[in-house]
Amino acid sequence: AQSVAQPEDQVNVAEGNPLTVKCTYSVSGNPYLFWYVQYPNRGLQFLLKYITGDNLVKGSYGFEAEFNKSQTSFHLKKPSALVSDSALYFCAVRDMMDSSYKLIFGSGTRLLVRP
Amino acid sequence: DAGVTQSPTHLIKTRGQHVTLRCSPISGHKSVSWYQQVLGQGPQFIFQYYEKEERGRGNFPDRFSARQFPNYSSELNVNALLLGDSALYLCASSPGQSIYEQYFGPGTRLTVT
Image (cartoon, rainbow over all chains, first blue to last red; front, side, top):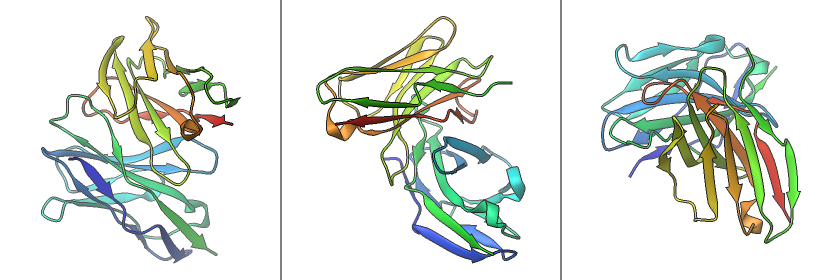
């Protein structure tokens, strides 16, 4: 069965420090991996995706993520956090072998960046 | 360009009633997906439509149905509403399937009393 785990309900970091939001996944075939961010009372905004190729992918607002096939992980990172990065972050996976093309989301990680 | 639009923004219904939610995809996008997001959880897949055909269905009861129109807009219908149907309903569009990311609308907040 396909699944996504985000082991941390909340991540706290000081402004200017690096941040990491963790994600691990389980799929039958090869994964397509995505990160989305959700601000209060808003829909989800696409940040970045991994389809194939370089394991380090760069996305919007200075975010990047590293795909690790052996650890089935896709952690979101940013070298220097901003207070405005505070939001709810979702990792999602699509199984290449799944004909329904659905996204499976994790439960979300709340990022709190303190000034 | 306009993003994905959804209507209405908020909706309050009574148990047993029926509801229709609407979604207009980004211009040029042919795929529309629906997700249910219960408070404190990640979105859960309900349906995907591509070129007006259902291409995927999540683990939701038959009370949930959807369709896609020739202009690629979509409706989600829920019959016999239950309290547990209270959630944020998200519509997402993409140019096609497979490798494309999905772009989400702001959602419709449904409250069932």
